[in-house]
Image (tube, rainbow, N blue to C red; front, side, top):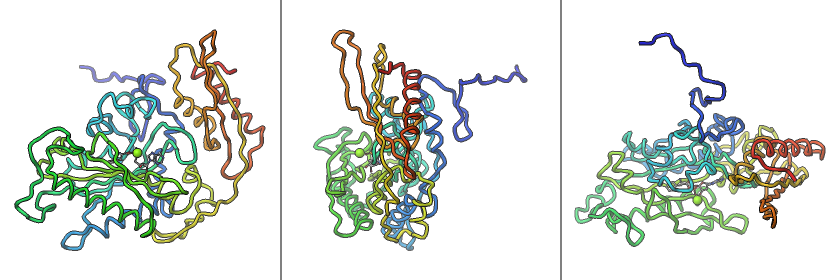
Length: 413
Ligand code: FA5
Ligand code: MG
């Protein structure tokens, strides 16, 4: 038996996240830049617009759902670490191993077993297993994605679950049942559920969410329901709202897949669930034009919400739009062909930080003789709080070129 042998982790073999040590492997793709967003917890910073929105939504649920003694029945979890296992983020939600949302190009993996959660739904199964039947989960989520005014690699979600026993749903009407025989999907519904249970649940879910949209944006808010698919609900819908003359997806929802409940030890209840993006609500509610602003530490932004409460109608006033600088970058992709645009977007974020407003692929072609592929990206730079000089931008742009050549094996043209 060995008592005094300590295995020293080799340099670069591991990574520390929230005080825990993880071995790196071929899945590791979290960047120091992304890890720097952990623990900012914007959704619980008093007077931050995301926290105000969170309060509005929580208040709606407290008000709308009370038990016979007048107490709120939903409990709120807003402090769960964003580091989750592959089992929590995917397997527990019946997301197949081949599902595209699991790929390295879509997620921030710590290693092959752990990642930064891609949705707050990752905690659904464990909370049900703990015995809860009505809860809200609020937190930061991480996705490798495009770069523009409504996308940021870190954003915030609120998820909800509401379970019902037969007696709760049908008010002790003995003729109506929750379940019948079946274990697949037919006509857009799980065959283990009775039609009457699904229809009543759908009605209650939609009523709850339209009520939420109206409590946030007023009785006249324009909305529509769109049928969709999630691996963990069936049937499933998205609720879209009119935003700047266009439809904006506010949330996804549906009737929970019964095997998730069975796996979590619940055999006599059915339920609905939804997941909603807090930034989308805040942008529409307060007329905030750019998703990067939520991360601003500048008083010009934060002071506009300083004295607000959940019920205050704040209209955000753009401090000033500083000018944009656009620089193009063109390169030949590496011969081995495993280039992914999200790798490049990450690199741009890491080197350029928040002065990068947008990255667009503007040209892609294959050389007729050499068969090499060329990409040209236009990077739009804009500081939120000052005017950038062309020299400042050039320095950053040159650094992006150098690192792309070094880290992604591309050849700058
Ligand atoms: C989900 O994440 C599901 N987990 C939601 C869900 C939960 C469905 C429970 C059913 C039951 P989706 O990827 O569509 O779905 O994201 C949900 C919401 O997050 C979107 O409707 C949108 O409001 C917000 N959202 C998604 N991507 C972004 C983004 N890049 N930036 C800002 N908000 C986003
Ligand atoms: Mg969606």
